[in-house]
Length: 467
Image (cartoon, rainbow, N blue to C red; front, side, top):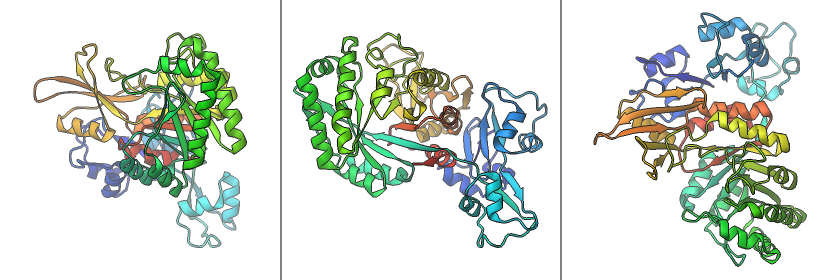
């Protein structure tokens, strides 16, 4: 798939003609609500062979050509580059598909072996009816090698809506995590209605992962965590209650998301994690954690200090980096998941834990702030689809911040109020996927289902093979 950014004056018909595809296919893959009212700066996923490359530090046209097995002149022509030596970090290049011309006597097996891809992928990519009969001179598209990753998605939707979400995207999930069982000061758990969600996950061959937490929408949970973590008896009771729920309901793993833990409870938290592993592993269950986005071991603040990256990486099976919420709903407007900040967190995590244990967190919602921002004023949170709807409705022009790899726009509402909206689009999603591939991470974890973002799921499928 290719990502195209709409220029002023372009229509869906012009775009479809340029890429030799059906306009209806573009409408469907992007779930376009206003196909006749495209916004300058809006990105579209174009369902045609090929891919998109976001230029990174150190990239050259030669290195990109070698990476994708596509000649430089083909890349230059596809992108209409006037000066091939002038490519800039953060810019997006269209990479046409790799083409193999069948030679006399060649077989599918030989072609697959030459390019290092499975035979069946070539057969599927080219709609070959009889693999034993290929005609010399035929142009075959060689599918790209797609990394194998795991994908988690949290959901805090009502059960019926959560079931619908899992049914919609379950083929692209490894884990589904209903959020969340809250611990209490006596070590018990506040139950949630998760039976239908678990059943929907299992029906989609998705692993249900239980989630426990210490905070609520109205409480940071610091004191609650201290009461439980400081008591060996309460730590044991929490894990006993977790096991009872897992055995009863069919969960296969546990995600521990304790936030705002007091710095003095750091070692007690590590002890809880070891206890969880010691008691869950013998029963065949796995243990994971969610950690605040740290960039160093000495980072201060209640959100960060008790999250010991080295210990989490050593003790549990995998760690979810909560690499989002820079654009906090009560803070000033900015990118919610800025790629430059995410990279700093990933690089610190990699210094103390292996890549195969790291899941990159990715939020899939947008935010709309009134500006100028007033301290304590809450931004409106909604889906990426709603962000495009507001841009279309108010005639906004979408801009793209290359440092954060995030789109944004401004508009004025009917009452004269000024707004700034930050959201995600195909380009920003692709930037996250490139980060996962660059560092060989375990996968991606979404926060959270319930915010429609069809471009993300199309690109996820195009970039990766999902475990």
